[in-house]
Length: 260
Image 1 (cartoon, rainbow, N blue to C red):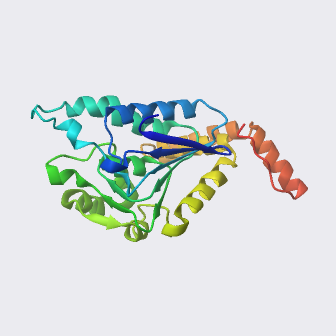
Image 2 (cartoon, rainbow, N blue to C red):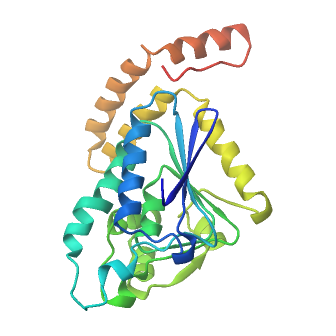
């Protein structure tokens, strides 16, 4: 991979966005590498959690503007970029049946911020910051920004952050419920990996079913949600990990889940 650093810790795939000279902004090649990595990991049963982070001072600054506005001043097709790159990435993150963690190590701006928000759990370094930078250049949020942000923090706060393009630090992001936790800078990598490894050792099928339920809850009535909870509970009850969890409880020991 030219623009990604890929590593593995036990059953966790670690994906580092690696264009630090441009704050890990996405060009076409990096987008293709990232999408293919997600696809491969979704089909690999040995991978039971995915951790996404960045190298250098940024998580990701979003789209590489030098690719969108070339030197000859011809305008790129923004719709085509979204359809073939970012929309596919966001939908895949939401549909992968295993936990995806964003470990935001620095600046997360524009599409970079929204890729982070699309993940199941977001943690941040105490040095991290988030900004919906689109309004500053006359654009609207993409990559699910208008979907995730108001659902996470409410319409009023989301509207202000999006329209004003205000930068908020990690502590404020945690305070308003935008992210799960802030980790100290000097322990950020260690604590992020510990969280991902903890998730990777949990019952992966059950977590995948939970993710599907959360996705569907956005549009369902209570009656519909209760019905699909029943359906997925039946499925979860037929997994190896459920049997192992019950057996371990009876034997008063720690369960050893296999993700099956």
